[in-house]
Image 1 (cartoon, rainbow, N blue to C red):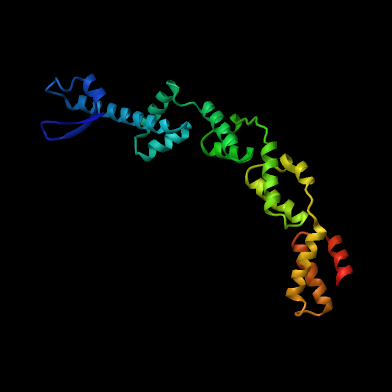
Image 2 (cartoon, rainbow, N blue to C red; image 1 turned 45 degrees about the vertical axis):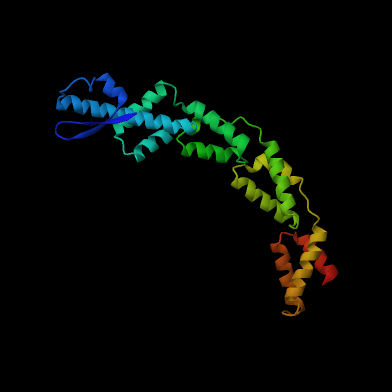
Length: 239
């Protein structure tokens, strides 16, 4: 707890009860300016320490997070360094344990891949050389791919693979992590191309002559991810 002391010159000083008791400020009637300055500095150190402990009480933090937090509170750099050293010494701060806990939480509570987890740790002040992620993400990858297939079942094989690739890379997976799963994906392109072809024809058949229409249909089908061979085969049979 903090208490406000009022000095004879009407100067008000807020101090923690730890320091008030330690320096017997309720018993001593006189205090020199130099001693008061030292007590105030000690109080600032204690204030930074208690704020950091409260911040750590919500969840584990990296050393950089504590440093940034105390800087925002406008503490002197020396006080910040002393506070961090004290927290490390008392084992409240430990980047190795923080990293291990962060990796476990990310693996168990999110779908983030190893690269995204690694980049997040670097942003939190963990040295890249210290980051080791020994987790098997294969089941997560299968689950994510299965969900994307269900959500995008109207896409051609090529478009679906590209959609999944972009999605997984965005989550922090490397292509080599899921290339085998990707190779097993196959849409019913012949059924899909029929529907897309009919939609394209309905939109453009009255706008172009025969040759231009054929080129436009090819262009639109190619944009949807169908292979040139399948497009040519379909057009030869239907246009």
